[in-house]
Length: 421
Image (cartoon, rainbow, N blue to C red; front, side):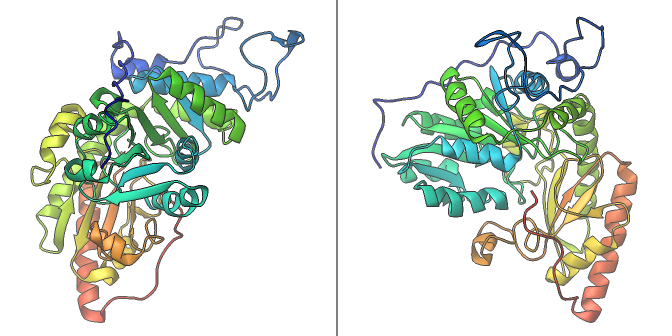
């Protein structure tokens, strides 16, 4: 390990503490009333170009919609407020957000990442970043051994907390402290919790990223991503790439995601209530091997949740291992009546999937199982339906799936594609 103590990173000061609470910011941040019509809700600005009064002198702050658009700017202002950030930049997807951040690194750079990341992030790190000369080292215990992996070339540390799909937590402050001693930036993927439950910048992270598709939009009708941070230098670098690469969301998607985020606090609270009820029911079932949910006292990282999450909330995501192997896991997903078998997460509707055959199918089996993604693992995204209905749906499907797998030794085949989150 080579020290970088002559180039330490000082954690940037957080943006000024908001005057208002989360719900008030969600509704009002980045939502000016139209000065000419008095419209309370912003219009959708579909224009790709904007008038100039003279050469190089636009009427307002906008020139061309790839570079900036009123709806995107308002959405970015709202996310910045919710994540306690000075800046936010929106992209066409969560994967595009990851790509832009990694593209900011020079060839020969080194990244340290937690092992159990989203399959799409793993794919980008191992197949795309590698192709342009960025090496990624994966570690299952990043707080413990981060210093062992740091080299002169290390420029970035990538964390998912909770991780997808095993719901492992990482102590952000511990990792940021170690990384900053060596001049290394820390990125936290906060998709699984949303800004309502966790604000990574407050714990020392340099950049927080989201697949907006999930909780921030919350209605399964927009594909979009966002990054938020406090550094002016990062804003200069990443906004240049946002414009140069052009992976930006449409005005309509920005408007939809902004509208969806106005109820984020309500949805995140209800999803947590529902996931907690489902997790307790699963934990008590003889048909379940293990439950991964940071809202349970049995979770190995419960102390981190109590420190980093709002009121120790567990969020709306959980996963569990079902008795009966892959066949039982697959059958369980087919037998639910309220939960829909589909990829993605964070919407108002509850979803269920088998990561080994769907969202994480692109990761080699030995690597998946090393971080707990076994063939019998089922991932659940709890929506905002009634908790008792969701609990009963899970229990009836569990009973039937385990009984059927015991009799028939399961069914063959896989479901879904391999690209969802």
